[in-house]
Amino acid sequence: MIAALISASARHRGGVLIAALIAAAIGLYHLVTLPIDAIPDVTGVQVQVNTAVPGLAGEEIETRVTVPIERLMGGQPGLVGFRSLTRSGLSQVTLLYEDGTDVMRARQVVTERLATAMATLPPGSAPQLAPITTGLGEILYYTLEWDHPPHAEPHHAGLQPASTQDEHLMALAETQEYVVIPMLRQVAGVAEVNSIGGLERQYVI
Image 1 (spheres, rainbow, N blue to C red):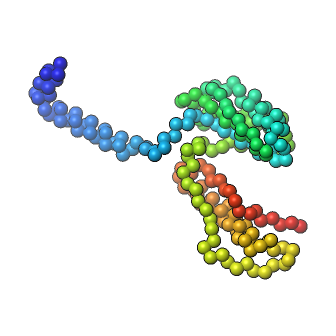
Image 2 (spheres, rainbow, N blue to C red; image 1 turned 180 degrees about the vertical axis):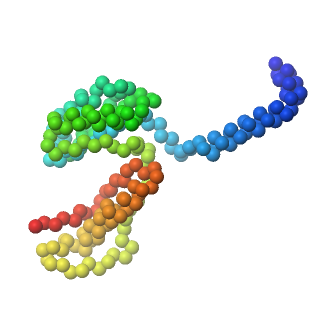
Image 3 (cartoon, helix red, strand yellow; image 1 turned 135 degrees about the vertical axis):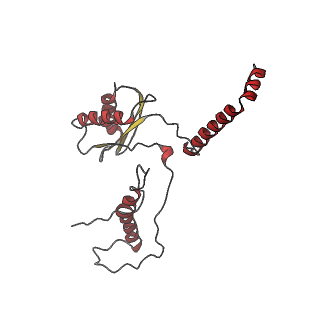
């Protein structure tokens, strides 16, 4: 078998050369276009529902929000299971689907069922779908800091913050919310920008 293959290759050198060039071209194409990750994302198809429930304890959120959402989401095409997490003020339900399930179709079904669930959830509940991303998609952490903290102008004693540092933290939070986040969301591939820290400016009348 091997002798016949070598003999045929020797008789058809041109064909062997052309086949080798085609194989090399295909390999080079895939080498350039194949996405390579340092940590491959092996997470399956999933849809995550996050519900902010202010003013309720974890046990109440579990019985009044998490469990009803889980029951309502059952029976979907391709759904293989779910997991949930309940904390004070937050309910998180993650729905897991079979490989090959259209994630956009799954999100549409979940959105339709959430519209039905709104009537049974506690007042003030705000269920939302998480972006199409996973924990392995968090690739960048950054901080905003003062290079040279500006001098705070004096204010009325009843209006000024507790300290100049508080004023700086408010300004950083506003810069993050109204300047940095809108710019990052215009970058291709950015699914979500989460903020931690800073102080929210409040006007008390």
